Amino acid sequence: MKKFFQEIKADIKFKSAGPGQKLTDSAGEKNPKEKSPQVSLRQPRQGPTDEAQRAAAAALARLEQKQPRARGPTSQDSIRNQVRKELQAEATSSNSPGAPGTNLVPEPKEEISPHLAVPGVYFICPLTGVTLRRDQRDAHIKEAILSHFSTDPVAASIMKIHTFNRDRDRVKLGVDTIAKYLDNIHLHPEEEKYQKIKLHNKVFQERINCLEGTHEFFEAIGFKKLTLPVPDQEGSEEFYVLGEAARAQPQSLEQYKQQLLSAEPVRAMLDRQRRVFRPSALASHFELPADFFSLTAEEVKREQRLRTEAVERLSSLRTKAMREKEEQRELRKYTYALLRVRLPDGCLLQGTFYARERLPVLFQFVREVLQNDWLPFELRASGGQKLVEDEALALNECGLVPSALLTFSWDASVLEDMRAAGAEPAASVLRPELLAAIEQLS
Image 1 (spheres, rainbow, N blue to C red):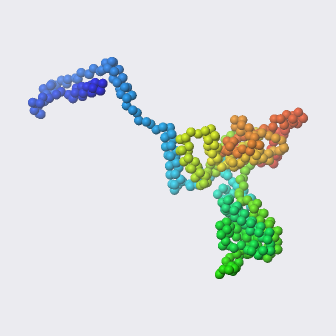
Image 2: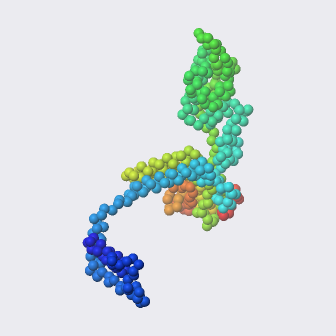
Image 3: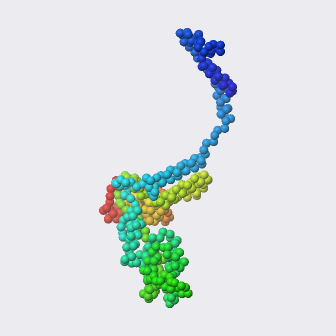
């Protein structure tokens, strides 16, 4: 068959070469036919018959079947290549000078859009009551704690220990060691060795000296730093020695110890930014600011690590439980949630929450605005999903991130009992002071 095609090609090439020339003719001589003023027209070549065409097509098909085809990339190869490309693109954008290093979505430089559902995410300092942006909260809280030393140095030093030191395990170890020192003083008030603490002691250096605020705490509860000679040794060392006034009030040391053990870090509280809107067709429309999508540096690193793990994860078989776990992990990338609750009269209640907050927090938020806060009620998400307060699921586990519209309704059995008794719930469920501040959703 190959020979058949080669003969056809040679025949076509031979006929298209033009008239021939004898070897005995000189190069300058021309063919007499060329002198004729009439141009000879080439006769069109007759094409192959139908049988020849069918035979050629069948032969080509057999040849293609015999030749092995190159193996294309598998679906797993494509997945790996796609994930690697995304990781490389993210790394390039994060390393470029114009890209922000700590935000997934750059904050806009222009003015805040008036159509945003909320202007941003804000926090309230528990010490001063000041409303803060996220980038202001840590610096403001530290400043507030330091200013508190002038009024209550013991409380300020305890707050500094628990707030300024991020490693919670190290803080617990240091606090427990300080509590042990104070217990020894309380249990052995007459023994001199328990009234002083060597600063260069290995335990003190490894557990206490490394924490911010510990020195301020010892000085606030009555210890004084003194340089004393060391028995049976040359030279002297620094000690914390309990003063006479503190020795005379051992119950105060016990109180300070309990304060130290029970204290928690001072953290800014999320501002709910509670708002009430009139009935609106835009109830399900959410235009969120960048704060709802921006991530800290630690969160960005975590997302990149999870994407890297996806390369190996996608190449292996996964059970249903593994898939559900990965879906929940995907939901955890949201830090905040903006929720609206449509009330029976059509009014809308709006608030900002942490995505990891539990359903009881949401129910309490709604309950606080009701005139009849003692009546049981129900909340349903889109699609009719009923939210159960007792299940205590996180908002992101219920799919309520980064925003959602919920529907409020009174418990059906309670309504039946009220109507049977000849009573009806109020037309407006909100407290009067909230209705006075109602807004128009735009």
